[in-house]
Image (cartoon, rainbow, N blue to C red; front, side):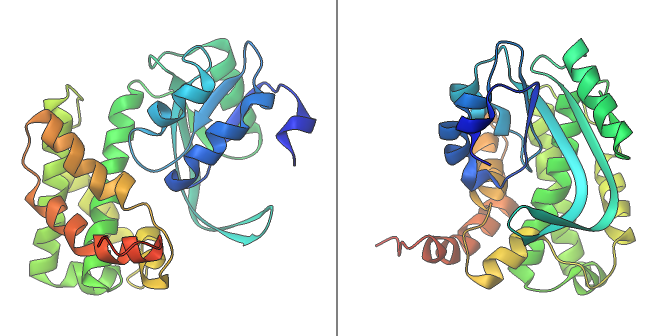
Length: 251
């Protein structure tokens, strides 16, 4: 639907890949009213910051989702795995009547949704998982089963997760002490033939979220004074493929 023909709405759920944020930011204006809540459900930890210039802090929320889905056709999304879960809050992490109303709408639709005690910690815990898993599996070019069965690649994954946990700690984000162990338990519960979206996009030769995942880990790590040798390696190893997918050789 054309946003210009829709008019202001109560809430906007942004559920695109990070590389599409500029297009969303440019076209979201007609949907925004004085009390509209905008909630990004993207992977990564800075989608809300990237959307801010087109939205304004008074409308900007934070959020995440856990779901495995795919685009079946334009306007048609197929849910293929994991019970859907959504966490959201206002920019400052608080609950508000409009945030609570959006949570209630999700619950009414059969989605497990909540306003968590700490939305920033929730965002970083998911980032620890998806960024590390996606990058390691993409570099290994193998599904989850072989990656976790091989001691060397499993150790690489753990070290990638530990780097994200260290960055979060340096930025004052409180993750559980066993955050990495919890993430590995989730990893071990997934089907062995599973792959990450980053891995699939890179294998298909199409633009991926490498910059918003491992690239962001490297940048935020540098800003925070935290070394990121694993994520730096992953980003450097995958960058030529990413640049080729975006039509640039880097020469």
